[in-house]
Length: 336
Image (tube, rainbow, N blue to C red):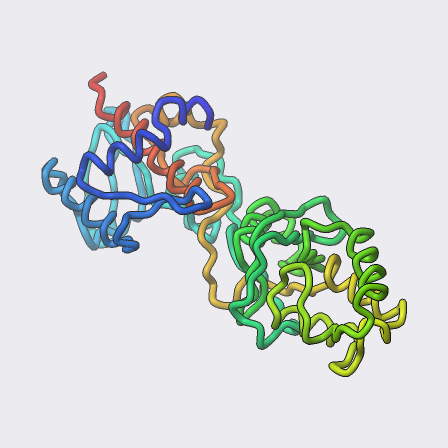
């Protein structure tokens, strides 16, 4: 996508929306939204532009098949028996969760990389963290045991498991690995990415000397949310009556393990089917990325998630859609 982004990038997207009257804001993490915090603002902008350009929208036209004739014309057959003919076609249907949904494209000779879900929350049915929904840490590490796949960043405990930017990014990098393993995985959570194990062990050792009577359960350390701290301390077998001086080495070791390598068993994606994108789609080897035109069929163009492109956050996927859409539209509109 480097060449494509050099032609239409984030700044171009920002400028386009601002020119159309959409005021934008940037969050601390770099994500951008309309100042209204309402996606309807973007929808209204695009619909207004469609009206001004006198683009015709055909609703209730469920595409069934595309025929490419020897006269260099595309015949689109719809389920409502309508047939329309065009010299150029741009397919921007987004991603499909099932391979068979791409049949009308593969019938034109294109190879489809099987789609799998990406950008989702890890479902943990038997989570020992239940009751802590909404609790988050700003800099944790989530790793899939038995692989090199891991991400560092904010983590959020939800009703159904672990979410937050780090978890969602990990689901993108691990999309195919997780699919091949039926979305079952052992997750290792480090709630304290800014601290190594030795540093934490030394901290408890020094605390025994400096504050031997300090209650361990009621005093959160390392900046962890109090509710999460209390849960981890309790899981380590430490009671509310125990001072730091009362703690055995085994209990301290257990607490350190829970803080830096807590094991959670993930079984499936989020139960609410809230995957943001799919990984997979039209093989990029069969598309001219300078024009987004098919290398198989002249006059056929693609843009957006229907292509085998997916990023680690929603913003990257939006930008890929804006960029490929701009390139496809520009080139499809050229007269041969």
